[in-house]
Length: 106
Length: 124
Image 1 (spheres, rainbow over the protein chains, first blue to last red):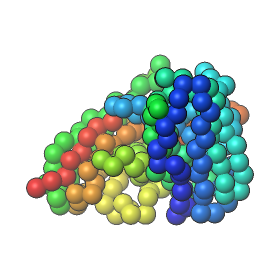
Image 2: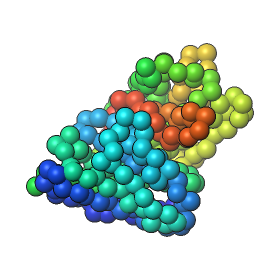
Image 3: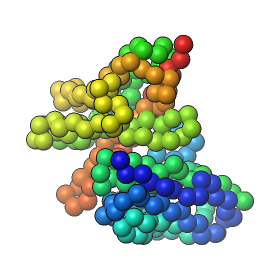
């Protein structure tokens, strides 16, 4: 199975900050990485697929990049509604998720 | 509107079985690829199983660690997908989500839609 190492486990940001989360795969995943947002008590929601393609309706302050084994997800100008946990998913092979990053307000 | 509604969770003793159901609406179920994913109390997400559509001979894939204990199935006439879980262990305690992959002709969206989840607690 492909392992996804996601960091940091938690992140503290002020409103308007830019934050970045990284995921490293144990092997090349050919850009087949997606990012999900989960708020307390809710199911995860898909934000980005195929590394950098935003799902329709997702604000442009969310972005993704990367290739090979190394990928990142960023939120520019953090807003209060972005306070949530974020997970990466590789779907190049049998799907596996990163451990998640909890974004909190400083 | 796409809707996925899971039922069948509850408290079960180790070694026992449980069958989860997911009723769906708002999309063409017969051509959909359906999945089960669980989230542990520690918030870890784990893909469990996928069942493809009739055109792909209902091909099934499993997470290796649940193969032989968990069985995914579907009933296209009821727009429903199921997860039969046998010989349950305490580490199977989790929220179980039914999810739908989506393909719009250009892009493939993994786990694009999720149900609200059903809690399974395995404890004596």
